[in-house]
Image 1 (cartoon, one colour):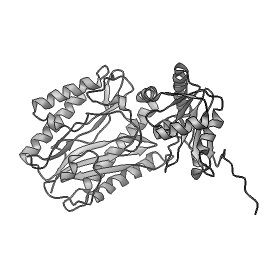
Image 2 (tube, helix red, strand yellow):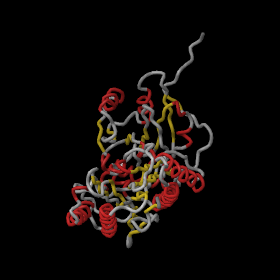
Image 3 (tube, one colour):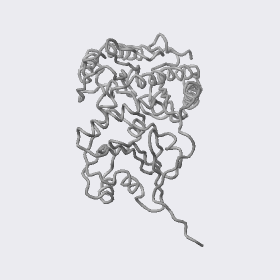
Length: 405
């Protein structure tokens, strides 16, 4: 039996290019900004390896399953490197070229990367994403190359959104509101958390398929928590049944072409007791105060300090569980983060036009205390030159979110 020649990597334009989330001009502008960063940083090529940066510069959002992926950018080329298991889909979903590596032998991924940048001596990397093991293999496979971590600089480029990005984020916020309505309609005593969550997820996916028919329908999710399960912002959905008097946490997260948006609200099944109502209202007041602080020129740490002082006056700061907001864009619960734009004490980034941030104070009182439970509200704000636009429409607070038992 004759041996089949097995390539290390190859190219295959299987089918036609798909309609990407953004125009060619949008991707070219992003690449131009990245190439300027590369030139200023003295690197010949940029090796992007994270889901968010590959998607940002190429439109392709990969599913790893333990395999490495890349987007290699030079002064002339933008090439995604993908695993053979995905065959033609990465090419169809990539702006620019695509090279497919095979798994017939170990490290064909690095051979494919080397074929794109055979002469490169200085390579930019994402230091927060590349593992120590990958660095070792890269050094062995690519030879005498020097690397420079440009993660922070690349993140800073993503923090300022284009008009096209803001339009997509607004669509996501509108979709989150639709999910929120479906969740609220599904709430009743005896219903399981998972049943309520599925109602919200299904409503969002139907809306995404209607409004964005060319997108990949993937990754939208709902965290709907009740009772003690509300104590953490990222607690998973369970089969717990809703009971009269429960505090609830509604969290709808539509994903449109990798762009994450969110709606988060506190609700109660039946009228809350006086202690719960007091904490809820205090968190709502902090939410509104925080929204008023978001404006061009404000700093993340400065906003955090002001809300901290508010909670000190209410004797509630000790129950705050995390920062007061974060950036939006290409990010998710399992990939992506624009950590330089979070409303925390240790981040001094100055807000400016083009940034999109949330305001989301959360207080959690442990079991055994009056008003026990997790309270959280969340709106998304787009910072413009002369105004700040709140793009979240779902109402918040006791007047709107007490559900009849």
